[in-house]
Length: 358
Image (cartoon, rainbow, N blue to C red; front, side, top):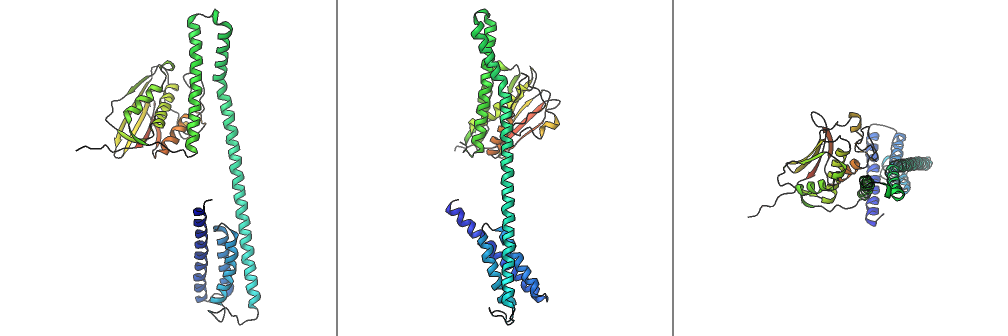
């Protein structure tokens, strides 16, 4: 922890301790005015020490507070008041018991807080391990299909290339190429997601939406789909964005539409501005998304019941990465129905002001 953070923590703990002791003393005066016994005021101070033990970061504050309560109680509420003297012979023992009770109570509170923290850390470790195991199972299962396909097609070409005609060889080459590109997309999504979750900085500039959309469409491989992709005419819209990441968002959304819709589906991209926000949507007129899938659609490694057009399972990373990127830009992403059928993915970005010359 840095020196600045440590100083802030110390000041906060001191402030909490002083505030709690002040409140206990103020309530003590109220109790005394209402005729409550000193035993009630002692319990009030002991409760304050317990609260300080829970709210502060070090047991030293509760120890000092336990000592302070003895002096505060003696000074304000024991005859003669506003002195540190005590007329009754039994009061020194009372003060010792009061201190020990406050200290033991605060020590128990600290132990309970420490145990709760340890249980919380253990739960986090268990959850991380569970997630790591789920990731390994998912990645291992879903990578097997393209890797087996690449290995099998390459083996066929090595063993039987001369016996295959040109069309067969070309199809095998195309299958290997398509599977390798799918693996590249997966790795890029994994890397981008990891970087953003680790706090990588965005390279934000004023970007033209039309250029971002056009570049994203160029990343969609025409050999892998027969869907029609249309870009609606756009006015000159500028956004504050990391263009590379937003290209990846739009590419993922288009690929998602292509992969889960039948041939000849229309995929339409449009953008518009409302106030200081720019909206970009990717819509298709395919079968749409089941209601039970929508809540978890943007969760990492969630794969819904929809069937991909190529029969291959996805890892559930593309839409999760989209949400991560858009949230990093301060925007939102959502899915809705495209009437009469289909799905519309819409996300927002902050608009950039267009400079006026003259």
